[in-house]
Length: 159
Length: 116
Image (cartoon, rainbow over all chains, first blue to last red):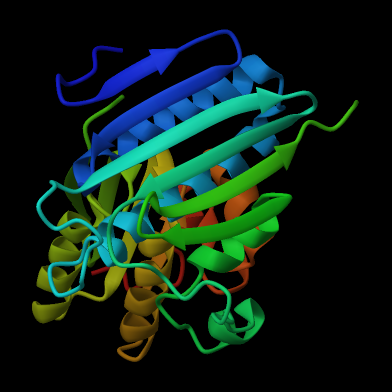
C-alpha cells in the first residue's frame, strides 16, 4: 500500500510507530496498517476485526472530539496529529494512541447500557463500549507534557 | 483499500444502494446525504447492499439505526443485504442485528416493501 507523504511510519520487528494528520480521511490507512500487523502477530480473523474496530473508534474520537474546532487543545500551534505505537509484548498486543487535543474525562465517563441504547434506537455513544469490550485492557492518561494517550491491550489467546 | 462508493439502483418503489469500500466517520456523511435526499423525496424503502464493504464503524451503524427508525415511522425501513461475514459477526456481537434487518438475498430484503 502506498502511503500519503504526510503519514510517517517506522517499523521494527515487534513495534510499529505511525503518525498521521488528525483528520478522518486517514482512518482507513490506520485501520489497514493495524489489521495487517494484528494478523502478522497471529490473531484470528474475529479478533483482528475487534482490534480494527476498537482502534477505529479510538482514532475517530480523537478526530471528532479531541481535535474538534471548538475545543481547547494542548498545543494549538501544532497541526492535529494522531500518533500510534503498536507493539507486541510477549503474548499481548499493546496499542497506544496519542494526541494533543482536548483531554477527555475518561475516568468519570460512564457509557450507557448498550442494550438500552439499541432498544431506544439511539444513534451514538457506542464507541467506548466497543473499546472496553473488544479489548482486554483500556486505559487513558493525559498530561501537559505528552498529551492524551489511550492505551489498549489485546491478549493473544492460545488456541 | 477501496474508495468509498455509493451506487443507487431503483427496484420499483425500493431504493437499492450498493456500497463499496469503508463506511467510517469520514465516509458516512456521503451516505447520510443520500439517505436524507431519499427521505426528503418520501422514499422510505431502502436496501443497502453491503457485499463490497470492507468495514462499518459504530458511527455508521448508529446513524443507520436512526435512519431505520425514521423510515419505520413512515412504514418503510432501511435494511442491510449481503453483509460480509467478518462484518456480520461484529454487528451481531454488538447487538445491532436485533435492531437492523439483515438479509442474504435481494428477494428477502425487499419482501414486504410495496412492489411499485
